Length: 122
Image (cartoon, rainbow, N blue to C red; front, side, top):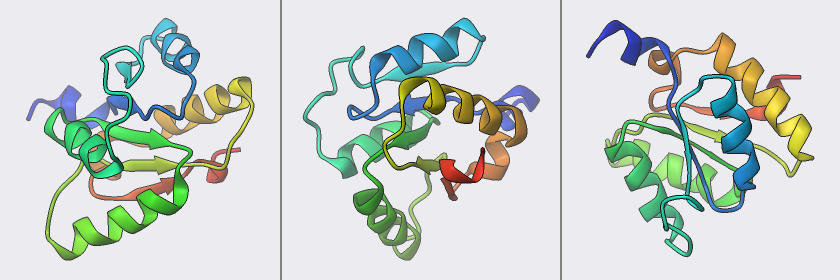
């Protein structure tokens, strides 16, 4: 893995996150894709996490309960993912602000196989 790959978090936004969040983060030069943009709407949560893991992307979602459970299941089954970021529903501007704070403070290596709460990045 290159140094850049271990430093910069690449994000995948679940379908419950507005697609404008991806566009705003890309304007700030972050590597972000959204389920809305790549026709992955309607895939179940495990399939979304598998997709993110296969593409070495941390997954961001407002679907906290399901992904907390999935994270535990994946840990128990020794499956690896590139990280999960969960949050309560927030306005788009606040979501972007907090994600930028996280993306500027946490590396891809640090988030790997971890679950982060966006509320921690106020």
